[in-house]
Length: 204
Image 1 (spheres, rainbow, N blue to C red):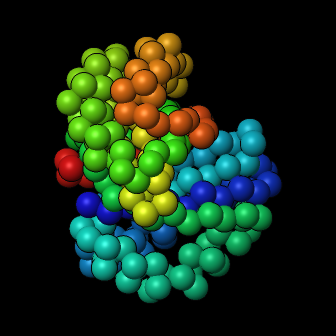
Image 2: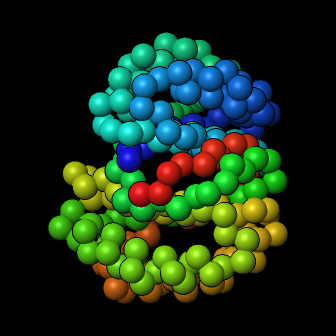
Image 3: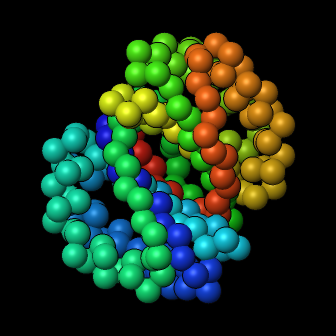
C-alpha cells in the first residue's frame, strides 16, 4: 500500500472547523476515488497542527486522487492553513484492525535513514521491534512508512485513549533507542496528536 500525508499548520482557533470539514466532506471525497483504502485525521489544538494521511492500493491511485481533488482540498483547508507540506510514502508495515475516533491518541516519529538501510530497517522493525511494541497496553495500531528515494521513514502509533498514549512513552522510548542502534536511523522529530478519525486499513 501507499500513503500520502499532508501536514498543515495555522491558527489554533480555526483548526476544529477545518478538521470537521475534512472528517465529513473530505472523507467522502477520498472514499469516492479509485484505490482508496483508509484515512487518518489528527490534530494538535494547542499549537495549531493538522495531519491527514490517506492510504491507497498503488502509486497510480494515490497520484490520480491528488490531481482530482486538488482544487477542493485547497478550499477545505484554506480557512486554517498557513503552511502545508505533502509527502508520499510506501507502507512497509501496517497493523490496524479497528476504526478510532475522538479520544484516541496518535504518536508520529520521523526518521532519517540511508536509502541502502531501508530494507534492513523494515526487517528489523517487523521481526524484532514490532512484537515488543504490540505488547504495549492500549496500542490500537502501528505503521512504518518509508521513502526510499529521499532516505526517510516514519512510524505512527495509535492508542485507544490519551492515558494509554501517555503511559506508553517510556516503553516506546526504549524501543526507539533499540531501533537507532540496530537499524542505523536518526530520529528527526517526535509529535503527538489527538485522533479525529482513523479508519481501519488492511495489513501490509
